[in-house]
Amino acid sequence: MNNDEVDDDSGPFVSQLHSGNSYLSFQEAQISSTMAEERTFIAVKPDGVQRGLVGDIIKRFEQKGFRLVAMKFLQASEQLLKQHYIDLKDRPFYPGLVEYMQSGPVVAMVWEGLNVVKTGRVMLGETNPADSKPGTIRGDFCIQVGRNIIHGSDAVESAKTEINLWFKPEELVSFKSCAHDWIYE
Ligand code: IDP
Ligand code: MG
Image 1 (cartoon, rainbow, N blue to C red):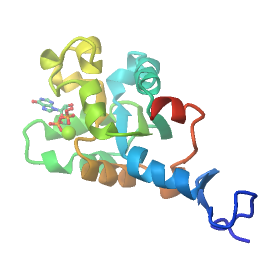
Image 2 (spheres, rainbow, N blue to C red):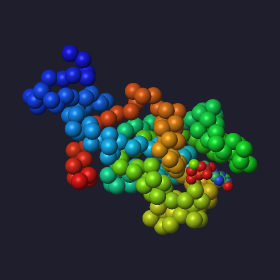
Image 3 (cartoon, rainbow, N blue to C red):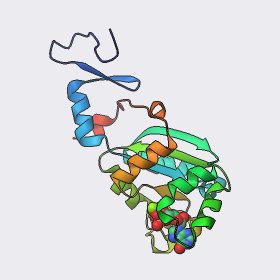
Image 4 (cartoon, protein in one colour):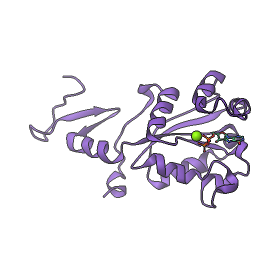
């Protein structure tokens, strides 16, 4: 028997799919793929780590109802950061941005949930903290654009690219949260 087919007592037509560490029924897997499987890449930048804001940032995503899929603490290489910000390579602030991002450890994360990319960006606030409303992460915790403490993917496609850049497939952990049915109707 392999991981794709697991015997259970749920009847002949309910196959089980292996997803990370848990087994989802076919119906559950369909629900998660249609509703809640969107993922985003979030990173607490070196200033956020140095200022002790990691816990506050994780708390906001957790209490919103999003599900943590992967997390690691690392000092990113210049090569990784240049690739991560490759779309901005012609901007005057690009060298300083790469240097800032490399100046200390970061917390790289993947979060999952319905519309998590767009909602994550709303939770972050605007790129420039001066334009970010109170209640957003950048609105509450920082002042200048060059020290804006957090990264979040700006689209579903860029989220996929960033997740693949920062994480190996086996580092992404799928499980059904016991709160799932209390968060989604
Ligand atoms: P985002 O992080 O809100 O997606 P982007 O335009 O993708 O914003 O820029 C990436 C990062 O580059 C910003 O989060 C910020 O750290 C930095 N950045 C953007 N614009 C400036 C600038 O004008 N001066 C310095 N740093 C900037
Ligand atoms: Mg961006």
